[in-house]
Amino acid sequence: MSDAQPPPQKLFRQEALEYHARPEARGSLLRVMPGWTHAVWWLVVALVVVGGVGLALVDINDYARGPVLVRVKGMEEVTATVGGRVSRVLVRRGEQVRAGQPLVELYAGSETADRERMKEEFRTRLAMWLLEPLNVESRQALTTLRAQLELTEARRGERVLKAPCDGQVGEVRVREQQFLTAGELVVSLVRGGAEAWAVALVPGQYRPMLRPGQPLRMELTGFPYAWQSLQVASVSDELVGPAEVRRFLGPGVGDAITLDEGPVVLVEARLPRETFESDGETYAYHPGMAGEAWVKVRARNGWLTLLPVLELLGKRRD
Image 1: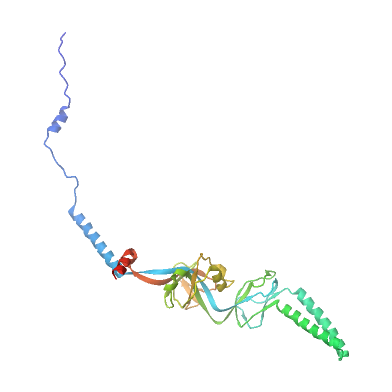
Image 2: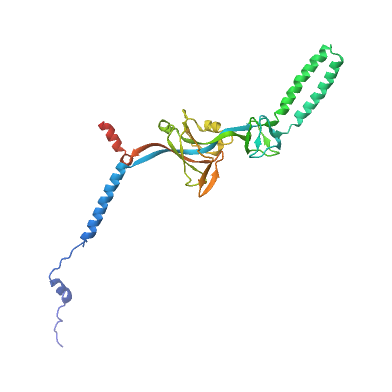
């Protein structure tokens, strides 16, 4: 046997040594297309310039926003003077009525019975006085009965709600057999020549900026994008709270909106027409219709709106 040792193995493979012995080839890390970068660069510059010029030339409007309601000026609201149950409803919506015409009757059983009893007693006393005209006691009793009879007639008259003026029946809020309390709204009457108005309730912080003649934009609930362009006709001098607003709007309309806590300003604008259009259809305004209103209070430069600190720096420089 031969004691020859095997040849030693190389530490690196021959392929690796050959690759390492090749001359070094350097490549670029990022290959850039000059035409594309130049185009994007000038596009960005153009957009910045156009945006800056646009902000300098365009004014951005500030709006006082709040809920709005449709009201009819010239409407009379008939309320119950006493409590009771409705016996008959004598009118319908849209009907023309005259002043003094009965609208709703309440049950008057006890008042009618008292009147009949007083009338019968009055007749008896009157007959006794005619037989003895000089009887002082009969004359005094007759005078007392006459006053009591007039009182019972007045009480019975309170059970009949009558129209306070000529007009057209707007809303009938009651039905037969319904129980009413004193002060509850029963019927609304629209006088001749009545006008529809929009009453906006905007936050009180905008009161110094509000004045008649400002543009007002209104959108009614249920009619999206059916904008109504109006003009402010009057602005309340005082700020009022939610309770006072509901008292001003009345029992029939005051509960139709939800007010946030805090004082508000009443802004009124007259509706130029009795109807409005939405999606090609024509609709009529009705009292109590609610929506949203925007009153333009001021216009500010675009740069001042984007960077309010510019306005502060300008004031300090002045």
